[in-house]
Image (cartoon, rainbow, N blue to C red; front, side, top):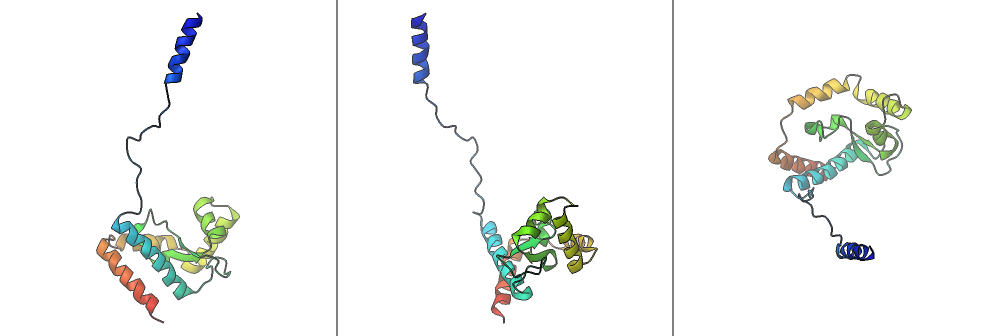
Length: 158
């Protein structure tokens, strides 16, 4: 009996854990020319909006503290509206941006943001933005390069 236990214990000691190897490699985001260009355009677009609208949170009216570009219609679902000035507001992350994308309708912050968007864009803002999205062309690399030139030109002007 003792001999059998000793043999089994020896076999367990021989077995060593090795890290599991991935069958598919992890994706590397942001490495393509297109994704780098979009990242640059996002930064330029934010600066253009700040130049045009000022350094103020458009939802609360408070001075900007690390303002970000707030897309009313999400840029993932509506990629053609990504650089549309109608679809974007300059806001601080809290409370407006986080609440709009993560809280449910009926939450007081969400309702405050919705009210302010309707004041700024009108009650039919969703229909207008959806119509703009359907009429816009697909965003190609040449379109993105042209946008970069336009944004850089706008930033140079006084």
